Length: 380
Image (cartoon, rainbow, N blue to C red; front, side):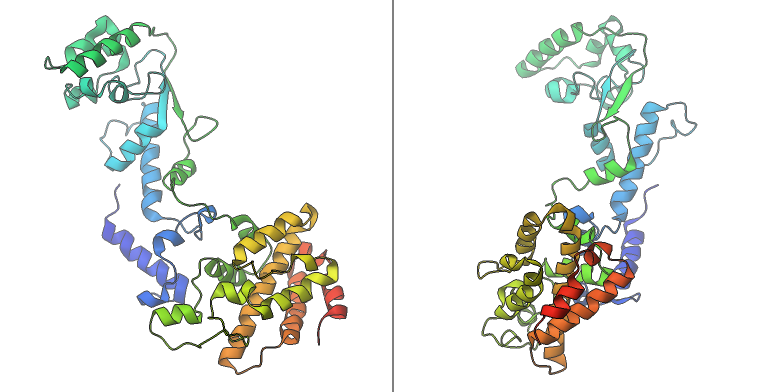
């Protein structure tokens, strides 16, 4: 059934509140990322939280698929309440290899080399009664070429040309005794799945390139969520506060004159570069320290991943997540607690937290041997 929009809106309001503040109601300013982006899959820049509207559409699409592939189901003739968008989606995503033509609509389905008559002869189908177009099967239409009688005799010159082309095409089709075979385009097996249908609804969204190294690496969820926000520039730094007319520091808290952005804090700042060098150099990766040209954290992280041997990538990715998290925590202590920005403090925080992560199960991070190397080589 079609769930009323107000019901979905009410549920989403509760979900938004729980996500951003852990309570039922939140103000707009608490929601750092638009909800339609939050509900995208991980590889498209979201958090993988289900989009309820799209989920309902995917389930409705399954009804239409089952009506086609298993017409003997007791509810198949009940006229199920399916959204028009869903009908269009299924029509464009499914094609039929015709057998006996008894379970394929002549005018509606995509059965002529993966195309529908609406695509091959739009002028012709515009002269066919909608009720007839919705019920006439291929078997019925080709028997004695009865499809010709479905067309109203008012075709334009273009329509006549399309009619003649269609006549020639249909003259080459021979029905056989086998059942019609319906194919779902978005599964290699050709079988429909609600999962693939749900993903199709996000076609056109921009891919979130760092998603694997962020979400597939070992790290606490809070650290991953922070970096997800950081890579979308949604952290509450000075520039973001300034845009909203809120109190903000005039410059980077790490004793620089640059404006504070999250990208600057993580890679662009000299302080951040010194920190990254202090944790990368002890195990021979000092050359991967971000330089002045590395102004985007996600891009720099991607370059590091490419240059690291595959066997070490998972561990290095966890280390970079931890490093970014330690820089952010140190920034907060400087702003809110009045601490002085000190490389040694961030370094020690990194080493201490790294040991805890390894104990908690970060085996790839532990295999790098960072704790011992950094404990001996770190700044004081």
